[in-house]
Image 1 (cartoon, rainbow over the protein chains, first blue to last red):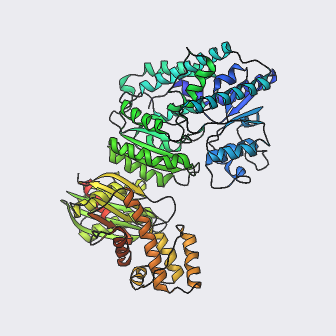
Image 2: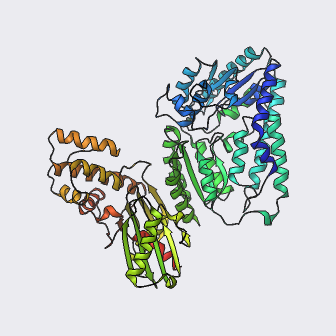
Length: 384
Length: 253
C-alpha cells in the first residue's frame, strides 16, 4: 500500500505534543482529559483550555488497574485507569500525557466507566456529564442541554475565562472543519481499490483527540493532498473484500484486528465506531444558538449505552451501501456488554440486507491472535 | 491430476491424497510439539500409502492451525473453507457442518460447498476435544469410552461449568455426591452437546448436517448431539480427514 509522509508525521507526533502541552501548562493554561465523544471539544477550547484523550489502548497498564478494579470489565476502562493512576513503581511506564491533566471531563455512558470515574475522582478532579440514555424527545434534550451548561460552568471555573457564544461559534466552525476533512478522506475510500488503507486512516482517527485541532487539521490537509497525488497504478489490487468495522472503539496503540484484516487479504473501507464515523459524521449546525446546536449534535451519537439505539443500525446499513461493503466485522472488547448485546440486532439487520458479518470479541493481549486469524482468513475466503 | 491436502491440527495431523478428484489414500498421526515435522511425516506417509513420489504430485495445499508454516505447501486455506469443500464432496446435499476438534469447535453453514456463515467456540476449551480429554481423565475413563459409558446412564448428572478446569472439579464434586461414572459421563456429553447446539441454532442449521472432527468418532457424543439437535447427523466414514480432503480438492482446482 501507499506510503504517506503525513502518516510519518502522525507517528512522530507524540513527543512534540508532550512538549507543546508542557509549554502550554507553564504559561498557566489548563489541560483536561476526556474519554468519550459525548464531551464537546468546542466547549473545552472556547474556555481557553486544551484537551487530550485518556482512552487507553495498552495492555501493560491493565494489571495496575486490576489492583483496584474487577478483572471482568472491559480492557479499555482498565487500561485507561491503570495509565492514569500509575506511579511507575510497578516498572510500567504510562504515556506521559496521562499524568499531565488538571481535570477529567467524564460522562455517564457504560456502567464500568461510570463506577470507575467515582474511584478516579480520588486521584484527579473529575467532572461527570450525565447522559439521558433514551435520547429522543424533548425531556432528554433539555436534560442534556442542562448537563452541557454545568460542564461549561465547570470549564469556566477551572480556567477563569468566560465561554461566550462568539467563542463557541468560532470553535464550532473549527471542529466542523475537521469533520469535513474526515468526510473528504472517507470519500476516497469509496473507490476500488481505495487509495489509502483502513489501518492508515485509523491511525489518524486515533490521534484526533490527542493532538491539538491545529495539528490534526494540518495533517489532514497534508494527507488529502497526498492521496490526490496517488496514481491508479500505485494502488493495491482491486477486488479485495471491502470490509466495514463496527463496534467498540480502538484506542491509540490498538490496531490488532484491523492489521489482521488487511494483512489477510481484506481492505477496510469504513469504521462505524467511536474511532470512526461516530466521531465526525454529523456536523454542528452553525446557524443555531451554539449551546443548543451542540446539544442537538452530540445527543445523536449512536453509542450502545443509548436505548433503543436504532440510529446505529440505520447508519450501519447506510454506510454498507454507500461504501459498497462486502462484509462487516463486528468488533467488541471483552465484557463490553452494550456492544456485545447489540450485536444481535445488528446481525439481524445485516442478514436481512444480505451482508455477511464476522463477530470478533477480544482484548488488548496478543493471546488470541491465531484464533482470530483463522476466523478472519475464513471470512476473507468466504467473501472472495 | 494428483494433489495432497495436509491438515495441520492442534491434536492430530491429517493427510489426504486425491487423484482426479478421488481419494486414494489418507493418514492421521498425532501432531505433538513439532507440527512441521508431523506435517512432513503425514505427507510422506500418504505418498507411501498411495504408492506415489513427490514428483508425481501437482499441488500440496495446507489447512489447519499450522497451515501457514508449511513451506512445502503451495497454498494455505483456512480449515473452515476446506471442511466445507471436503464434506460437500462426500455429501452433495449437505447444508451444515459441526466440527469438534482438539482445541476448537466450529459450526459452518454452507451452500453448494461454499461457506455462507460460520461460528467458532470462544477462546476457551468449552465444547472441544480438550474438554472431553480433561474430564474423562477425572473419571479415569479412556476418552474413547466416555461416549459409550454415557449411553448406559439412566439419570444423567447436570454439568453446568463451561470452563474445562471448573468442569473437572464439578466432576469430582458430583462423585462426592454419589453419582456413578455413567451418569457423570452422560452429563459431560450433554454439556458439550448443548454448547455446540447453541452455535448450530445461532446459524439456523436444521437438516442435512454433517458431524466431523476427531470427536465425531465417539458414538456417545454423536448420539448426545443428535438428541440435543433432534436431527440425525451425517458421519463420514473417516470424520477426521474432511479438512485435508477439502484442501486436496482445492489443489485440484
